[in-house]
Image 1 (spheres, rainbow, N blue to C red):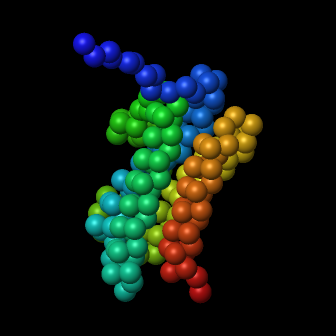
Image 2 (cartoon, one colour; image 1 turned 90 degrees about the horizontal axis):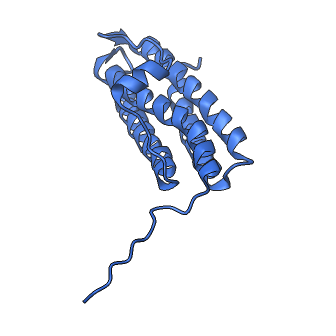
Length: 161
């Protein structure tokens, strides 16, 4: 007869898990909104820089989705669930109004950069807040910030004179 051994999913301190979720949940939701708005912008961007912006927006979306996944998985690894359903994202984020239809590339970039800036505020709050709670989770936030800032730079460079 074989024995079954149950191993707990996590050994995280409940206070660490709760603190991490407090700071990373807004990041996850903001990144999910950025991914949705980025794809909307990708489909409808128009103008002389179309192909460059169209392709760059696909990268922004992929990076936002990967970063949201990393932050969400950190919360779950510590033993808490994450609620990033579309209804929750819509209710808890302040994403800009990306056009529902065609839009010139300058306006598209401005809207997506504004969304990125909103997420960066939450990411910076996570970096600051996680400093005393969990350095591993802070590391996740720092990596997300670096990725977002790079994508923001690539988009903003199209607007530089």
